[in-house]
Length: 247
Ligand SMILES: Nc1ncnc2c1ncn2[C@@H]1O[C@H](COP(=O)(O)OP(=O)(O)OP(=O)(O)O)[C@@H](O)[C@H]1O
Ligand SMILES: [Mg+2]
View (cartoon, rainbow, N blue to C red):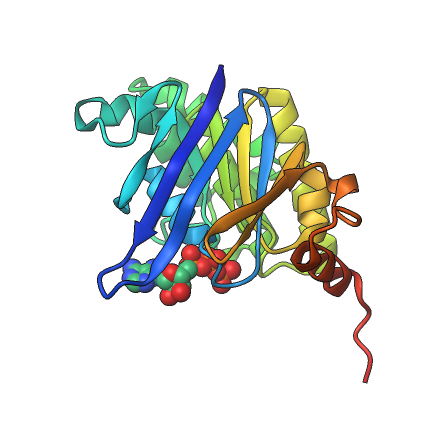
């Protein structure tokens, strides 16, 4: 069964701006799917619609057969996934450990179990014990990303959603985070949806890539097929992403 299904999803804002135009996507259980597209093409709107924090104008989105519109099953729907936000969204007033305990506490009410789970997840994402009691502002961006990932997986989701997972990181740290994400997705055997405009991230993580342009999914396929897929926009995007900037 497909895990996440977008069926003919449209989103038009008041004032008439149509941002999503008839989006249909089927993401299989265990698949890592990338939504790739340039700035302003509707990636974040798509993600907000999936999360149910933005209402779709028409069509439907479902996870394991539960529609985003079924308000009575909202808890069951929301319980399926966990999201790693672009800005990490750690709580500033909580230590790193407390942040992850907060995640664990969403699914486990036993305090000592939550503590144990939080420590386990922090170690799993490569954070040392010395940072557990520091606050988000006291650690680097890469470490914050790791902590946010630990909090996301502490919820033990079936689906992981990532919004621009490497933005704001230098290439070396970004590369390490990408490796960590890939290992985490594999070891937890989760379905993953990654929103990005970064071709390298897409190529590295993808089982399949869906290219979004002006609110339409214009192509879905494997990274290796992109370069010669015959679509002018995608080939230009591909070449521009690989181009070396010259004066
Ligand atoms: N709440 C809103 N009301 C009206 N228009 C909106 C709203 N949210 C987004 N938009 C519009 O929808 C379009 C797509 O925006 P979106 O944030 O999804 O782009 P994006 O693909 O995520 O871009 P980026 O890569 O820069 O994050 C933009 O034209 C934006 O102005
Ligand atoms: Mg965005």
